[in-house]
Length: 93
Image (tube, rainbow, N blue to C red; front, side):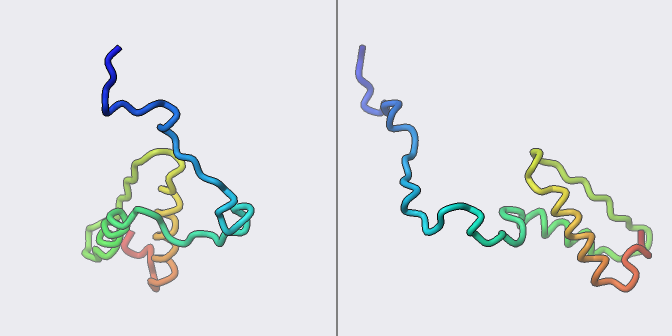
């Protein structure tokens, strides 16, 4: 068998981390995250669509992605924000 200088032994392919170095015991001690991680482009696109106020324009929101990635939470949050900030948020829908 020929040795490959770029070959990495299987036991070196996983990261090892000592949990004793973490400044908390359980994740229940951590504050809840706010916002949507890694969704900046999506948020900009949705905000752009939301700001279109012209007659005859409707907002149709199509969101795709893997299950459990926060799609519904993202859309519901934006719709809630619109409902709280516009005097008649549904008047154009």
